[in-house]
Amino acid sequence: MSQWLLNRLFNTKDQSKPRFAFQGTVNWMRALSRLVENGSFKNENIKDHYKSVKRRKPNPEADTLVFENMMLAFHNQASLVRLTEDSTHPYDVCRSAIISWYYSTYFTCSAMVAAASGSKQETHSLTARVWQSDIVDARLVMSPFSLSLSSLVQKIIDAEVSSYRGSNKHDLNTYAENDNEAWGAVVSYLKGTWDYEKWRVEERVRASREFKALGVDNFRTKVARDLRDEQLAKKRYFKH
Image (cartoon, rainbow, N blue to C red; front, top):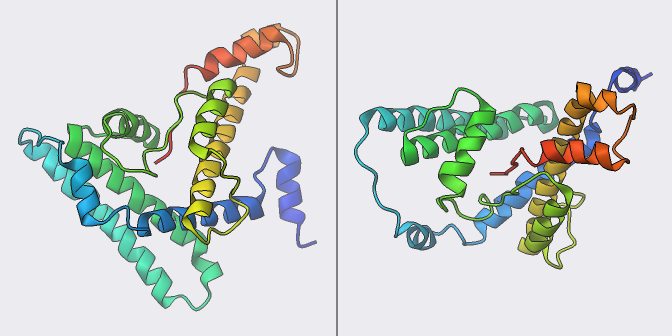
């Protein structure tokens, strides 16, 4: 009886596995925290990374946008701190804490985009695309936040993920206890999100007239795979 709602949702449409989704998110956040705290983000390292970056011309409107987004980022960060300090039952607020963590990161990224190019985005997906072009591609962010994948096509992803991972076998099933495990978890999250984005594209392709005209229900045939891969090649996924 305790599982009736989950069973009803699963019978209606595809649902994420709640335990893995929560576990993976927490382990990913833990991994990022470890990699940030390992000394890579000391002031001298940050200064060295950005020493060749030139100041942009004064832009009061963009500067105001930077301040606005940073205020919102700090507000969410303060909310996260308060949830951590005051909660006697952490599980009751963990999802709200994750949302605060996400928006603190999101508004920080929006502030960086505004500082770099003065761009203002109205949607999260547009922010993500501009972050890739204005920040990641311009090498204005440090690892691990610079990790990205150039395509959703399987063979390209396999090569790029392999390059990031090397011999590291750690994934999101374990709680990172050192930098090596944290790196494996971050790469695993990148690969896992690619898998989700690929699924979204496949669902759109299945609903298209071109796919329905093939008279198939999967991508086992070459013509179906070509139709899918054409759409996958148009999408560019990244993680920050």
